[in-house]
Image (tube, rainbow, N blue to C red; front, side, top):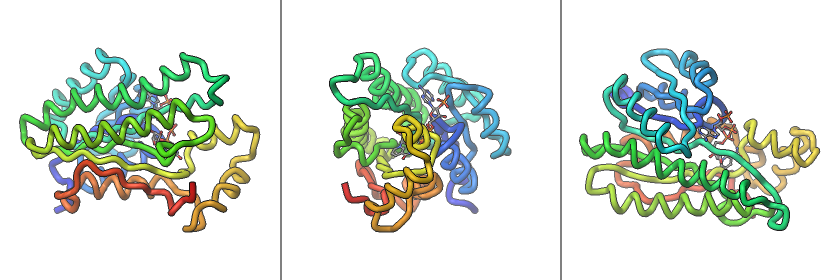
Amino acid sequence: MAALDGRVALVTGGARGIGAATARRLAADGATIAVLDLSQEQAAVTAAEIGGKSIAVAADVSNEDQVEAAVGKVVAELGQIDILVNNAGVLRDNLLYKMSASDWDTVLNVHVRGAFLCSRAASRSMVERKTGAIINLSSTSALGNRGQANYSTAKAGLQGLTRTLAIELGRYGIRVNAVAPGFIATDMTAATAARVGVDFEQFQAASVAAIPIGRVGQPEDIANVISFLAGPDSAFVTGQTLYVDGGMKL
Ligand code: NAP
């Protein structure tokens, strides 16, 4: 029997990158997956790749009505939610003096409001059944990063949300943890390289200098740790933020 047999996992931003790798990994662990993303079409591609009873749901995680509807659809179709991975994310990098209020709001809304709305909606199914695991995607940027006042604030905020939800939900058998990735090769970091006008291969090579493990991370490096935090081997772990960054020097 696989570790997550009989479990249902909802992965936000699951169409690509770390979310898609997580959806694949949790499915390999035995879970049935709901892939949530902005685009129904893109989410459906990942869900179809995974196969089984996986479903795709479209929602903007920062939109309360859409989140409620999406979570309702998952519970109606799959019966329950045991695992929530708050992974959906966006970047709107800029130095403080050039950062618009709209870019600040977008990043805070998707990461922090999104994790709040999805956790509130999905936890109802977990509370009823007195079991669950929520995993939030923080970042090494929570410790500060030039050009990311909005993103680092959001990712630090998620660490506070993680500890608070762990305190509130522990009595219902729900564990809440965060993973804080360093540099992971995805469309998000490729877009950052493009924005600063550097070839992605060169961008990665330059980043490796600050990573003792000697390589950048891959989405599967994060998915593996999320699998641990979602499963029974981490039964006594809650309220924690685990940095998964190859030992990156900040
Ligand atoms: P990615 O490749 O850009 O994928 C992000 C996914 O989230 C996309 O499918 C995107 O959909 C979706 N999304 C964006 N806004 C959304 C919204 N409002 N509602 C629902 N879905 C939304 O990013 P990634 O690199 O895999 O990152 C995943 C998570 O890890 C993010 O929270 C990110 O901040 C965090 N993280 C990444 C790194 C890294 O180095 N890559 C490091 C630390 C933390 P569209 O394609 O339609 O936009």
